[in-house]
Image (cartoon, rainbow, N blue to C red):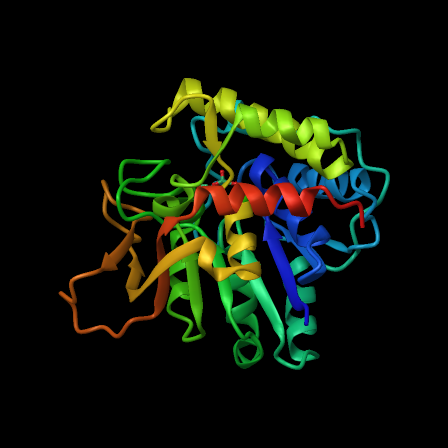
Length: 313
Ligand code: BDR
Ligand code: CA
């Protein structure tokens, strides 16, 4: 049986890989992608998403453009290292297909209200579209079986020492989503930094040579260059592909190890704005609300990517 998913993306080199995994996995049915401001402007994120689908022959998957700024804050922030790791436009041919006319938030609301409660929601960018949809039509919540988020960090952030990028861009939206009362799995940096893809893995993908394998090698090699110079991992020549790990965790939950804990989002601290505050030791009276990934199985992740991206349909 396949799992229906919607990806909410700020495409981005790792969102691109996540989209390809979701579009090509025989275990998932990707019913649409929504775009949001994040790694670059929402217009570029939309163009990049269309580029990915065109390149791998999946242009029939609809793409809906969403929010261009955070929910409350006036400005779209960008991570210091975004240019090196993502660039504004992916190194793929310009899109031939077009975005849909509907706004992403309207489409999310309509789609969930019309659904049987069987579409997993997978936000891998700032949570603006998702929080807007919840605020505009709270009845969608009962139709969302699970939200699998790439975002957050306990050990250390990447936008600031405290905060991970997707949460830091729109902390108010993230606070709404993590407290929405639905089942939530969070794939934070704590897990994604333990599942690196290496230059050797990229060489193997290039040898496989399918459009998805090639596009993944192109995107990941760019990431490795960016990480090696701006935020080196525990070994050089390898980088996390955060958003793809979240999609793989839906296909095979054992690719990450999770703990069920209370998580909330800081929205005001001058040093900790956007931090996911994780109550691993039950220091608050709050009930657990998030299955928070603390580790990942790197060989399994790379194997899954290689197998799924070898596919052409
Ligand atoms: C997250 O931030 C973005 O730059 C990536 O696409 C990923 O979703 C990692 O912090
Ligand atoms: Ca992303």
